[in-house]
Each structure stands twice: as C-alpha cells, then as structure tokens.
Image 1 (cartoon, rainbow, N blue to C red):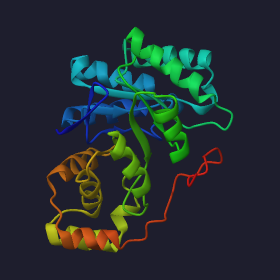
Image 2 (image 1 turned 135 degrees about the vertical axis):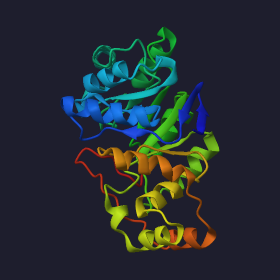
Image 3 (image 1 turned 90 degrees about the vertical axis):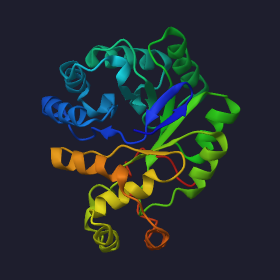
Amino acid sequence: METLNTQGIELPRLGFGTFRMPGGDCQPVVESALELGYRHIDTAEMYQNEEAVGAAIAASGLARQQLHLTTKVWHENLKPESIRRALDTSLGKLGVDYVDLYMVHWPSRDMDLGAIMETMQSFLQNGTVRAIGVCNFNLTMLRSAVEDIGAPIACHQIEYHAFLDQSKMLRYLREKGIPLVAYAPLAQGRAANDPVLQGIGARHGVSAAQVALAWLLEQDGVAAIPKAQRRESQKSNLDALTVKLDDEDRQAIAALPKNQRFVTPPFAPEWDA
C-alpha cells in the first residue's frame, strides 16, 4: 500500500478507524481488518477499545514494526502530567512499547499549547512515540503549533469527505508538507446513499462508498481511516484503492454541496478561525 512519509514515519494511506467500537466486540473486527491487509490502525483513549485493539494486534502474529498504530489523548487530559498518564495508560492497554503516532484528539479552550507540544515532544525523545500530531484544530491553532511553537506535526486528522470543503486547510497543510488524515471519509454512511456517487459508481462497476474513498485517496497528501465492522465492507474499502476516477467524475463530485459537517460536539473549536 502507498504510504505518506512524514516526520520519520510511513503512514499507510488507507487506515482502519475504530470509533464507536467500544469493548471486546472490537477485537474480532480489528483481527479481520489485519487479516485482509490493513496495516494502519487508528484508536484513541476515548474510544474505550485500546485493550481490544491490542489483543487483535497480539493475535495477528504480525511483527510490531509491520504496523502503524495511532492513539490519541482526550481533550480533558491536556495538562502535561495528565498527558503523560494518558500515554502510559494507552501503552499498557495496547500492550505495546510505543505508538507510531500520538495525537491531541480535540483542542480545549483553556489549553496551553506550548506546554502540550513540549510534553508530546518529550515522548519522541524517550521512544514511546515515533511521531506526534493533532486532530480537529482550526487553522489558527494549527498555525500556532507549526509556526509559533515549531512542533514537528506529522499529520492533522479532521473530518473530510465529498460533502465538506477542506480546501483552505489542505492548502496550508500542503504548504507545510503535513498530511491530512480524513476521518468520517464516508460521511458516516451517507456517501453510500448519495445518488451522484451511486451514478459514478455504476459507470465504473463499483459502489458509491468506493467512489467516495477513491476521490479522497487520489488527492495529494491525503490519507483516510474509514470504519467498517463487516468483513465485506472492510474488503470493499481496500478495493477502493484500485478505483480510477475521470474528470467527469471529479466535476460531478465537485458540484456536490460542500458545507455538510457531521461531527459537531459542543467542545469543538470555531472552525473558521
């Protein structure tokens, strides 16, 4: 699988998301994904499934260095000591000595970004984390981390799909050589039922969801982490890597409404800041 090279890590462009898969039910799902060939697994302390993800990795028999593993610290734990405890807890639950990518899951309104980034960078030095990143930052926050603080941000994970314009953020990330990791890349299932995407899929003999993923994955510097509990869907998402879109397809997707954001928790930042 093609990877994105960033801050010393190789990030497989199609990963496997585990949001809303809490508890032990997550283990067989991740085992299935690993069997099919996924090598980029995305979890978080908030997902309450790190133990299951770790058990699936152990059961897979894969060497640790064959996998890219991401986890994240919750926005309520962004004081330096809390971040250290959160990482130790995550490593213990995952049953690993290090994670490939450790991320701030959401910003908080009272966060000390300098102290957060200093703490995260200490993990790079002690080997418990190979790279650091952020999720759900607005452009002002991201500029502060990258330009004012000089943090080695390896990627930015945000909601991105065919119904949400992220062109402004993408321009900045490309300027800085930072990949965008798209979560909710299928718009939480809505892509599968969109008539435009279905029409494109019919022309190519593929599904609407595969079209939505192919559109993301053909973009420079973009990775995606779709979630799929059924093995058939996991395989279908992998097969999206072989779908080739043409200019007519891209024009039709460009004409879709691009103002639909589906992940809007009350603690989200001002997106346009």
